[in-house]
Length: 139
Image 1 (tube, helix red, strand yellow):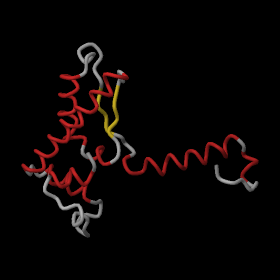
Image 2 (cartoon, helix red, strand yellow; image 1 turned 180 degrees about the vertical axis):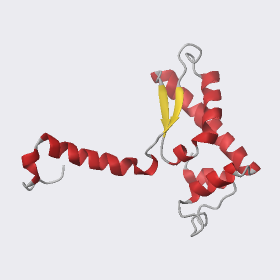
Image 3 (cartoon, one colour; image 1 turned 60 degrees about the vertical axis):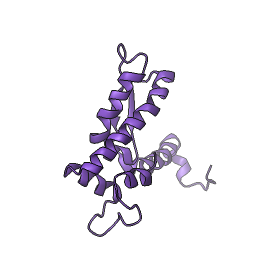
Image 4 (cartoon, one colour; image 1 turned 90 degrees about the horizontal axis):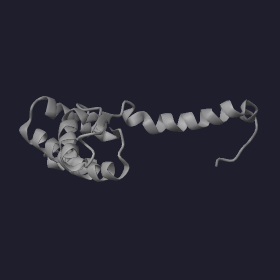
C-alpha cells in the first residue's frame, strides 16, 4: 500500500496534505492526527498495519527473518503499525511461536538513500585514496 492510498484511507487528500503549516509533509500530518486520537486516522492505520502484516507474513514464512525493518514513510507511522503487524505475524507465521520476528522502525527514515549514496562514494575513496584526483567515469 502506497503513501497516497494510506492518506486517502485516513481521509487526507494527498494533493493538499503538504502545507506551510505542515513542513514535514503529509505523513507528519497523518502522524499528528493519530497522536491527537482521530478515529478515522487510527482506524486507517490499524487497517494498513493488518494488511502489511498479511503481506509480511508470507515473506516471514519464506525467509524466517529475525526482524523486519519498516522503512520509508512506514517508519514514521511505526508506533501505530507495529502492533497490528505483529498480531498478523503471530497468527500467520508458522514459526512465530518458537522464533518470533521483531518489527523495528528504520532510524534513518528519509535520509537513508542519501546516506547510502554517500557511504558508497566514501567506500571507494577509502579503498583507493589515490583515486580522488583521477578522473573516473561513474559506474
